[in-house]
Length: 213
Length: 255
Image 1 (spheres, rainbow over the protein chains, first blue to last red):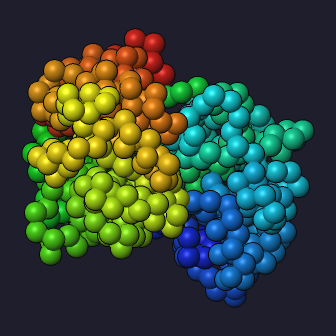
Image 2 (image 1 turned 45 degrees about the vertical axis):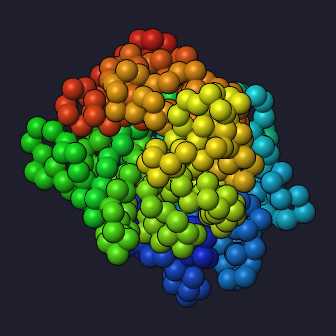
């Protein structure tokens, strides 16, 4: 199945600025909608979980709007799913930032403060160091520069699902993927041409009807 | 890896960029969207728009501008100038600005920093500090407000630490002694502030040459360097700035 302009549902749960994400996905060829409508989310070719600010307020807002279930269900489906920034972090089991607040648990490890004597947040462009060959970064020539704003990052674990790391006082997880679920700690919607290509890669996966490539 | 950012600053009046930008082949030197797209294409890492709109009833133009820029330009941008309330910040962030920068209003009511940070996250809360040398301030630098006209009696180093404590995610530090002089950043001030806070510091005020940008990072220890006239008037491109910085051993994202 190939869809001309795939429907990408960007989960709107009242957190922060989703305008750039929507425009970025539109730019990348999607029919991108900001939505909290369960029917639309379930019908979408791809689902995006954005997030800014902090872990606990995002989880609280997801719970309040019922979009925690919608996100978990979409992540558990075979449709392409993408978490961005804190929207990536909440896919994990929990975070140093909010002990006692469980995440969605799509990935079973934890989000930790970036260690070492570095400035937090990491607020800069950094190079994505590929750990696997994944369609998320298809068509991009190294070095791939992306824009980061974050103070925490997921544990690397055994590294099996880590698509890319960046070097910030040591290796820091920049992107993970497993099956249909893609997630980026950086902001593709703020990473200029590189970021738009990553969004286009996601839209292509949504159009083709699967995220694993 | 620590990667220094190069940030052009554009002055905006009623939604239009002023102090004309002399790109060749630009159609409209006052169009913030066209200029932002150009700076993105040239390799700018972020943009700062400084709203100098005098009358508050024309502020809606700034919100509209934020939306128009966010529609078409996919690098981070900050809007500062005239943000007095949480609602002012909310409107700009909802319109698509990635960060807002607060200055005078934060000095007057520091809780504003906490409010913005709590609602939207520290990453979008920039505290702009205009500092001027002063024998009366313990650190030798005093905070000024209202575009550098009004002294506050507040020590600049104490204020940046307080701003961080309140939730600032970044400090935009302008030396009022150097602003507009083209003599280079006030490096002593910049390095002291960079040491005093754990959040990123943007150095501003006084850039006249590419070497000034280098010094801001190497001696000033800033995380980002902001400049206006050397870019706007076509003296140097972003690429030239980054090439010079890289030659000096500073990590940058190549233009």
